[in-house]
Length: 91
Image (cartoon, rainbow, N blue to C red; front, side):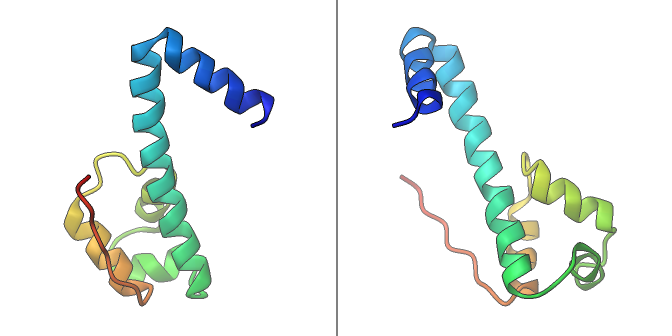
């Protein structure tokens, strides 16, 4: 574990509010990264995805960089556009 990981774990133990905010933000960050990586793996640009989803490039950028409050239907459509399927898990 590096210094940053140690710091984050220490802050989580000290502050429940920090822990919740960090975990929620990290989950949203991961969704955006997964979407972006799927698009890149499919060999598509943000503009190409935007055209497939009948939206603007700026909307795709927003989804990939700030995936908060993204609609499930948008996730499903994005996954289809990059040749993937969406699998959800409730844990």
